[in-house]
Length: 98
Image: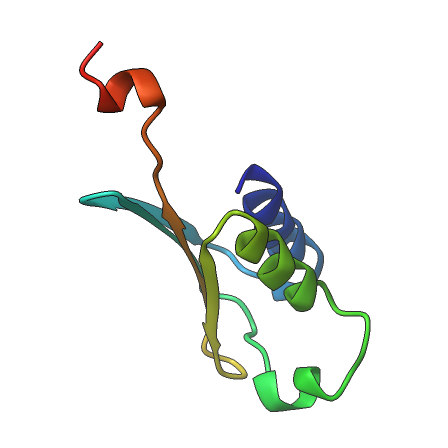
């Protein structure tokens, strides 16, 4: 997940022209939800889906490997929100009560 978070920040720094970034983290049972929001220039997600080679697909792949999900919400001139949902797994010793 740290690589996905780093990719989100890299995109903000390189492309968003944001003046503010907000990070929130919540724990729901065994699910970690991390949101990164910026007030930057936003994205046209439909236009991006037609272009190969953008980092968004890499984020999806990374999250899929963790058993998690990646979501992006954005509109031109309205900023972007990136949401990571990652299941938390307990170790065997934690499950056995050790």
